[in-house]
Length: 239
Image (cartoon, rainbow, N blue to C red; front, side, top):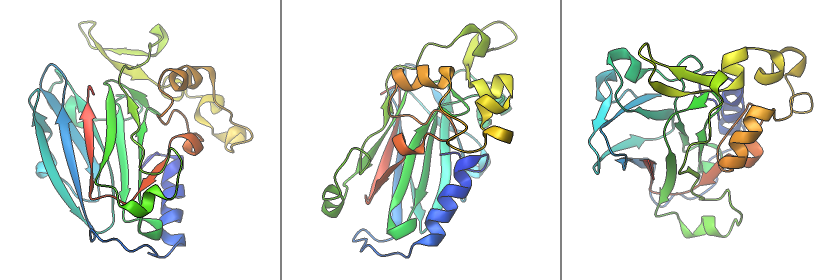
């Protein structure tokens, strides 16, 4: 799912607008998000979405603790986290500064929530998403992608040519092949801008093999997009 920056934006908007709110959401239209730090150090959580949290500053969470937020009605956005980042570095996530992403659309098509763990633009920390109190009706849908819990508990090996390092040589994160090489084959652009002309590339395939639940390249939604009706979602770093 690529909110704001790429392919998936159009897809999720079409999902939201194409279908009516047909399911009876007993929990109402408020969705809770709990951000949990199980890493060994403080994490600085960044967020981009329809509602700005914490005045646009990072949400700092010490090891072993959590913070909770509530979102009313339809909402789309993403969360990421960094350890040992400096100033504005903490608030950036994207092609030039990779981070593991938790992405959401709440109260979307059919009244459902849509979510995924995305490494499309790269990754840095282990991460998972767990629905809270999913409604019984959703279990009847069946399948892994209904109220499932996408997770990558150990980040994949990062090839040296994809590693982003700080000025002093410290590892920051792993770029995607698209971010690093900027060609049509890896970015699914130009003549490769359709699923049949942009199959998964070798770099993305290695990530998918290590973490099958995550979104790895532009047309990976069939094996990475989850749907649910739940009271909320727990995002955990270093699960």
